[in-house]
Image (cartoon, rainbow, N blue to C red):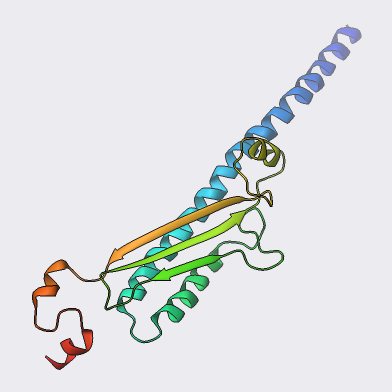
Length: 164
């Protein structure tokens, strides 16, 4: 009877030794897309609000918009798995347009280090750059004024609207 019990106890240890690595890999496979999705959601929100700010700000709208966008991107942790920050910030912010243009655009790009065990697979599939990081990019575009505004007296000149 004692032999039978000893053999049964060893079985669960063997099963656990096979199941735990598979379970950990599955967790990693689910965690990486979650991190990338979180980054994209925060980046998309910051880009959309940056477009709105560019469309309504006068004067140094680009400088204010970039500062605002950087503050919004502060919601992303400064961990290499969320946003590579070692050796300098990897945020690239490209702004175009202002209140006098037809369209404002904001493009945000960053690098994300893949989780361990996934980095080799992603490099093998060609998904990483030369530094071994994933590049994540978001672009937002917003029309500043509706098309009918071109037909009015002062058109796209906001200073003229104040005079009216």
